[in-house]
Image (cartoon, rainbow, N blue to C red; front, side, top):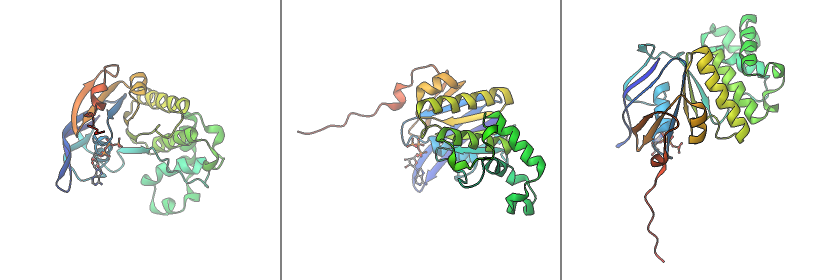
Length: 236
Ligand SMILES: Nc1ncnc2c1ncn2[C@@H]1O[C@H](COP(=O)(O)OP(=O)(O)OP(=O)(O)O)[C@@H](O)[C@H]1O
């Protein structure tokens, strides 16, 4: 469903992504692994159209459109003083007429009902009317997932979605992403720093090293080579 073909990214003179080919099928959770600076976030941002790149990004065979992909970040961008439900409704902003998108109090009933269904999907319907800022980090990330669902995109791109969460919340959010991929037939690409979480939840992994895709396959395979650094010489 999501296909990145020959994606290269330069920052100034420096090439940080080298003709990367990555696909994510419908119904699949793909984890992208690699050391700090290997190009994971750059790959995700190229997929989202947030960084200039060469190569093609397609969704279901067509050039990626503005509403085709929904994003989830490590830093959870919720409006903390608004209700959980309003935050989820915001996922629909991109497809509402301008007047309704400028005055969120006017979210139509249909959007509110859809947002409730999305909250139910992430297990938080009972918190719909609480202030978003009153939820735990793990719950807030699940609200961000519900907001992404309310956007109705078929592709979810998650950049280190569990890095700020405790181990139990991280398991819960990744299990949720896998379940949504499988049950809703979404294509989910998640950048992760925890190979063991990828092994437990992802359907496939891609490994990056110095901006090159060096591994693509079974999530249970050894990934130590992605994280091996040259030993620093020390003088005493
Ligand atoms: N806006 C930018 N301008 C210049 N260089 C950048 C920019 N964004 C990223 N880079 C460089 O591109 C390379 C890849 O960065 P990227 O953030 O994609 O790596 P990453 O694998 O996601 O790292 P981390 O695990 O630390 O988040 C790094 O060397 C980084 O310094």
